[in-house]
Amino acid sequence: MEQPRTRQEQWPSYTYIVPQIYTRANVRLIGLGAYTPADVITNDFFAYVSTRLGDPRSASDLERVTGLTTRHVRRSTLELCRYMAGADAPGLVEDARAPAEETLVDMAVIAAQRALASAGRDASEIDTIIGASSSDNDAFPTVAGQVQSRLGLPPIRATMLKGACACQTEAFQICAEVLAASSAKLVLLVTAEGLLPNIMNVLDWKTSSLFGEGASAFLLERRADEEGYIINGSDARQGPSLYYQTPLRKDVVEMAEVDIKMRQLFKDGRGKELNEVLAQYLVGYTKMNGKEVFREAPRAMAESVDALCRHANLAPDDLAYIVPHQANSRITRRTGELLVHDYGWPAATLDKLVDNFRYYGNLSNASIALALVELLRQGKLRDGQWIALPAVGGGMNYGCWLLRYHALQHPEEALQTM
Image (cartoon, rainbow, N blue to C red; front, side, top):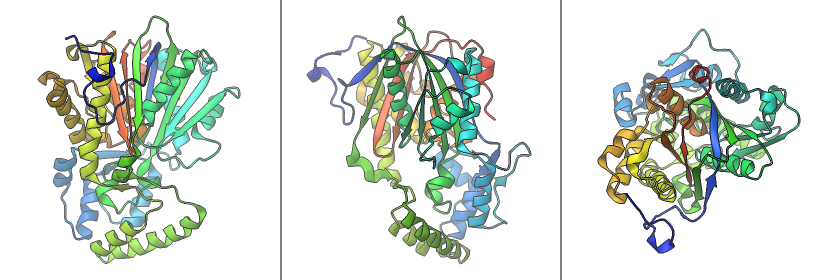
């Protein structure tokens, strides 16, 4: 299917994407790694919280609405849930393999080691590390810097992106541009996320119930014979749909007081008052308008995929999979529906959407890698297939990487997730 690609007036009327601003990337993905903690939160926990707050939901209600059943989290997150909701709260499942203490850096290092092993490469070959997170609390040294140190690397460049869930696609573009500039030959991209404990209140169940924890890593190499396309954008006008402000020191004292008040309101079953307290406190807790996110996020991802396929002169039928940021199963499907209904893609596009949200939840910048690992585990990835990796996040930020998948040297090393 030949589509217009060049003149601005020939592009569809996109809401978000500026199609002329993109990167043509001579980059190959040669290594992939992911990690999720062993402990689990089931829907029973959030059903218990919602019911105590006077807005009863069953575990099956939550699964029906979100498509989500379990979230993998660290032991410290389970302890936080018990602290906020009570020691008798159900749905908090401990795994004997889980360490008592586990940091975002710990998770990122494991993911990085798996990516290196899958590529058959040594850490000493890495020239640059790019990190991304929506939820880390390491101002400096950064997660990227600490991964550099833990891998035993010399003091090479280690840059950290901090933002919402589309930092992963922004990081893809930065890696490609670093490699194109020949300032590095082998780039490690690492992400690590702990949104539920770090940037939201557990008792804000409509938001916190959507998230899990984990880390990912990509190993990228410049190849002159490789061709890919990456695009990103930002529209702060949509910021109120999903936003977060980092607390300052003066805010931390007030946040502690707010948490104590919310715990008491929860014990008393005064859900309306608890929500009023949370709504008026704008710093330190993520705020999300679910309806607006559902309306705008799929469109940004659909536009990103469509624009890059046009740049690549790639027909929709030639795209093997769309592996989006796993924000929500309904958002994933809506992305495909928009491609079909608004941009003329075939109905079979819906079968190309990859969705593993059900067992992990939203892992923010670690979500795409884990979805790729699950696709690899199912034996669905084939050498030479075109795949699209779109993402959208608060702010609002959005983007996509369109690339050819090439078989990993040691794919079995990428299949571990715990």
